[in-house]
Image 1 (cartoon, rainbow, N blue to C red):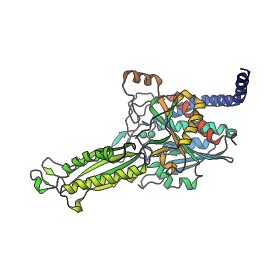
Image 2: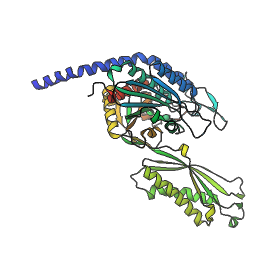
Image 3: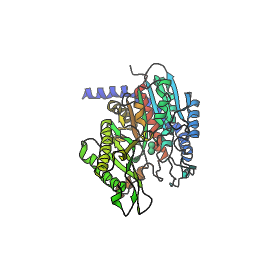
Length: 449
Ligand SMILES: [Zn+2]
Ligand SMILES: [Zn+2]
């Protein structure tokens, strides 16, 4: 018994500085919170589409510069020469130690906001096709930017508690998954110190504000955009015998493609093949020359992705051959490289280490292991094919009362990308800053030997 009391006392004495440090950190977050909420509302009301993040990027750069970071702007080279790279890199060197990168996105979506919030976006713009569209931070990248700015401010105020090179990056064009690629193509890892660790957070549209969730290992899928052009021989709709009908071949192909996931690959390797668009023909009585299918393919593993692409080509060619289409009219499979991104692999050891550090800050009950998803993100590119340990966690962003109501009623909450998605600013940003600051301190702590 005596021993137990002694150890409890000892633990209290040992933990006292840790608790005091945590309390002082929380006080700093609380002090910054009103300013962060107003920054968030300002960013929310002024969203910009992917490849056009000029003002958002300039704002983030100016804020980071004011905090004492060395800031470089206009990073990013796209294949499309009209697009300017709006990437931002902000560096703070603070003695010897690891190089840690923290990333946020800058871009918003072509969605007309319908939340009715006082700070809702009313922005309208023209998309690349020249059509007018509403613009909204429907994926919550405004939450990410504000959390990044809050974390950057806090860490600039407690430089005695960390050592190393801290780098914040604000990445454009995540929604089109070509922003990280464009920044890397512009020398992200040669012009600036290469990271030992890369971190990011993404808000979640079904987790309560105040909590975070994470998944070690493959957490999000790779996304491959494919056009499959099925070519036949067109002619009169009343004389099918004189044609090779690509509409019939396209229909057979679409059904056969679903057997790749169910019959050709291991059930233990998740994958999705979705034909999201089918276009062919102009008139009821004309058999067209070709039909174009637009596909998205999702996998975790690269070898599964390669297997699926080969299977799609084999099946499409086989169906064309069976229909008697000549060799020179065989189907064409085109991978749309600038709409293709890798899977997100959370380094398992890093994930558990950071999750434990966040749990010590926001409470064990508020850190939950979640399920992986088949949606995609281009954060994985920053890990250079798993060479650099990377970790992205989900930041709960929904009013807890709404999560509870949805659980009881069974009515789903508005998802990410919905015109009704409505993050609850205050507890979300507070948790975002506390969690990301804890993550960085875990990796860069000045007291660690
Ligand atoms: Zn998104
Ligand atoms: Zn997003």
